[in-house]
Length: 277
Image (cartoon, rainbow, N blue to C red; front, side, top):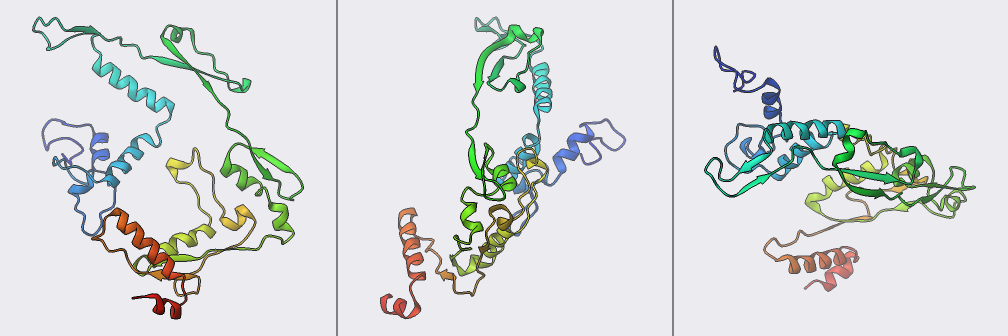
């Protein structure tokens, strides 16, 4: 199976690309998780894969599947399944349950008010266009230009903020809006992980391969919003720790305990000792 899909000195069982895709690691092995439960790291066992493995596999196949790739996949299955358009169930037994499935797909025509985005369907596709749709334009969001002297419309929220400034930038430019300070309430065991995550808000982040079609590079909070974001670190005054939720509690009681922990975390230590039973 691992010899590029062929037995040693024997016939080929699978295409090489199928073996490579099958044996590629979809989710890195983690402590306490075996290769079998991570799905594509091992041969099929009949066990269900983890949610992480399933999500990662779907992204590998669908996340980068543009229209032409989707059409190729659809055409492959259509050719494989519909060698005949007439079916009988159960097959070949003289059953009265017979039906006809057209091999041709069903297409939809999507119209747009933007004249620059009109596409004329080829005449050979006209007979199988059975649905019509209308593309509605996204509403414009209003941003400030980079000097704070005029507004700029843009329907894309990320592009609008990256290329321009927030709507109230004129106030920030006149020092009427102070820097933004975060305060954090977090259980001690999760503090390091949460701190690392929050610090990324001030870092430049580039989209991955599967996101490059619809995400833009983010240059960090201050570059995007033109104001500083002050993120505390564990041990500082604005980073408060709270106890973990009792795992024996149900969802409702756990939520209530979480709110109590968050409230108590903001109370000064002396007052907290007085209030605690």
